[in-house]
Image (cartoon, rainbow, N blue to C red):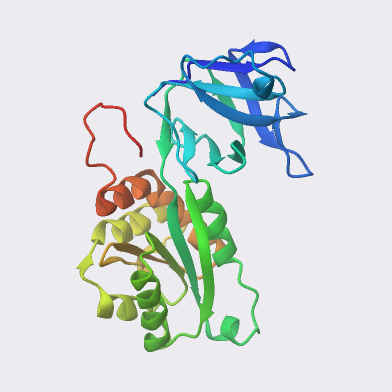
Length: 273
C-alpha cells in the first residue's frame, strides 16, 4: 500500500514528508512537535474537529490496521504501532513518513526471550544480551510479552520453551549456552523438543559474523520449529547476540510469516505482513 496523505491542520496542513519520533516525555512527535498520530481511510472528511489537532495518515480504504498492528515504512526504517482503544499510533522506530511511499501493515510478532546462564539465574551476572535482543526484535515488529532467566540445564531450557510453545508464542529468542563448554547445552535442549530444524539461521550467523571474528564458526547457534513457534538460539554476549541477530534480520519476519501462514496471500495483492 501507499500513504495517500499526511494531514495536520494544527501544523502546516498537508505534508509531503515528515519526521516522527518520541520525545523525552514519551510523547509521539511530528517534526519535534508533540501531536497525536492517527489514521483515516481514503474519502474520510478531515475537516471535522476530531482531526483538527492530530496528524492523520490517510491510507487506502482496504488497508486498515487492527489493534496492535504496525505500519512499517520500507523494511521497518520507520515503525509505528496502532492502539485501537486510543485510536492513535505510538512511534516505535523513529524515521520519515512520506506521501506516495510504500508502506506495509505488519502483524505483531508475539515474542519471548530466554537467557540461559548459571550465574544470571543466581543473580551473579547482569544480563545484557537479553535486553539487546528485545531492543532489536522490537524494531522488527516483535512484542516481547515474557522474559526469563534459567540455568544451563537441558530440562530447564526445554520446559520454558515448551511452555511458550504451548502458549502459542510466534517467536522465542534464547541467548547463551551455544558454546563448547560442558555446561553449554542450549542446542541439545532445543533439538530435544524440535519438530523441525531450520539450519539456515545458524549457517547465516556463522558466515556473517566471520567478518568480526575468526572464531565465529565455533558458535553452535541453531533454529528450530516447535509446533508453530520459531525458536532461535543466540550467543550469550551482548555483542555476539547483536551481530548474529543482524545477520538473520533480513529474512526473520518472512520466516515467521511463512510459519504462521500470514503470507498466504502473497502475489502483489494488498495484504497484511
